[in-house]
Length: 341
Image (cartoon, rainbow, N blue to C red; front, side, top):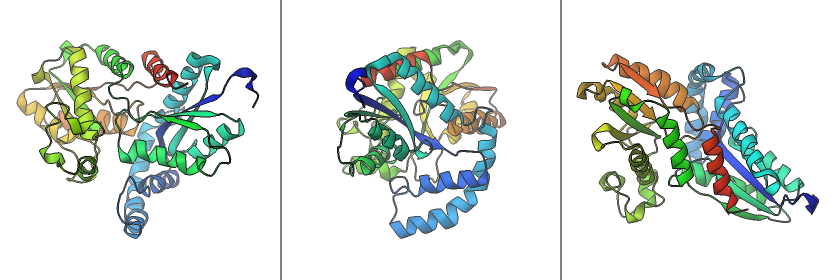
């Protein structure tokens, strides 16, 4: 690559991933890659292989394919189209200061192919931004590890700068506050901040001396909470609630998409079942752990949980759309990566 255009830095945005199509075969490939990741299902190798490939994937692929069919638009997967648009807009903002690339941890565009393109163009530096506001071994670390697995065999290893989390970045908080404020909060009795769940054993490992069930991070950010997923989620809620001027009796935090009862509590579905009984019948749901709309926001919350909420006496549930490629979010991403360029 010639130095004349000064594009010495490659910015790599990485999101979780999506099937290529909403078909059973495509969903099976996606789930197989995703669930065989040792950081996602952290069980001994053989046990994980048997569980994932012979039990979970064969049963889940047909069910998940139906959900993806509900999610799909004529442009394709919203997660992919929104992340591509984000890449395009961040590139426009950065101009010739850096070249912006985008990959998915699972499926396409793959980390391997994207990094090969970066290598072929000869960039001397990579700024890696996994698009997960809160650090977790199963997301941020998995992306970092996958990137290192590729580049460690290169003849020339570029300098790599990593942004491991950004839940407290002012630009991220401002973008979400603006997004939430675009809804009239007076029309709702309550705001629910719903985050993707994790097995409690994942958070227990971050602070082995303090069990997740005994931690007080739901009240204030503890000293040991800097890289604890649960602690940073609660802190995000507090930071957003403060910016929105919400009183403590008008909001709470919950966790969705659980696979068992040994995941972070309180559960979003259980919380939405209880809220109407407490007199909160009009609820606004915000999902700050997702920066792009996907299956978990559009289908899980806006279809399934909405139905559940109404069936339990609720009157109105509104899902706040994610940041996607909103201009204030584009500006936040630009600010985050610019300090490393």
